[in-house]
Amino acid sequence: MVLANDQRAQLEALYAEMLPEHLTPLWESLAELVRPQPRSPARVQRWSYDVARGYLLRAGDLISAEQAERRVLILENAGLAGQSAIVPSLYAGLQLILPGEIAPSHRHSQCALRFVLEGDGAFTALDGEKAIMRPFDLVLTPGGQWHDHGNPSDQPMIWLDGLDIPTVRHFDASFAEHLSEKAHKETAPPGDTLARYGHNMRPMRGSTADRRPVHQPLFHYPYAQWRPALDAMARSAEVDPHLGHALEFLNPADGGAIMPTISAHVRLLPAGFETRPRRSTDGTVFVVVEGTGTARVEGQDIALGPRDIMVVPSWHELVLLAATDLVLFAYSDKAAQEKLNLYKEMNE
Ligand code: GTQ
Image (cartoon, rainbow, N blue to C red; front, top):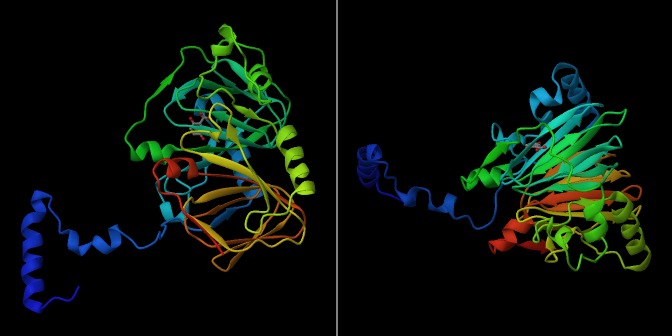
């Protein structure tokens, strides 16, 4: 905007006068507010699992899961300091639950996913039904459903929490409550819902068919199911130039994303494979499940090793190079953006 000197001075005087009335001129900020393309305040970042794990275990010596309610280290994006966000819409944390511990039952508006990184045999109970968690299982706790975590095994368990905390905060729509008991009473045997809804089937009739919410029945996506599915795909299908072999997790109730605000997928990049450059509006959190490689984000190389966590913000160009067979889990706010007609991607 080109302004004459006296015009500028008079405008500045006007701004100063109306400021106490909480009125500000759009023309000074319009270009910043309505941008021609995304320019995320979030940064590209990688967390080494071993480094984060060291701090998490130290926290485990100092505070119990019950005291903390949830013993979690937040992965906070350096560009979003103080916001408990990994991208503007989503949260990520590493949760530790030690043998014998219980993280007490609560429920909240926020949706959560858990992706198991270490340990075997701890559980998340959803409305009183346990999902027994094994390495690289995906477990959901959709908004509004009671959930507690427990670890009857003899090893620590660590998982990545992905929640829509910043999205719910954005809409000023957060409700939460605690259950009076520590753990919800058991309502079904472990694995019950997975058996009913996890095989492209659903119960035909009866009260048990209605125990889970109709719009959100399934909450456990075991590694033992998704990993062989990726392998079979890699054997039979041509590799997608931008994604590698990729499979998205679905909600069987509607064939859509796993939760209203969060989408998740896994992919396999064969050894030596390099993806074509791609950008998308859904800033994405990646977890390395197996293998090693490099993520080239806007030309900057990031080394990837097992259990490392990386975030690629909105509209950053991503190229993935697989040194060995590389298996990744990822989640993003694509589900929310699609509902709002905002999602875009560009594949070169
Ligand atoms: O396990 O319910 O990382 O409520 C943040 C908030 C985990 C949980 C988090 C939560 C939880």
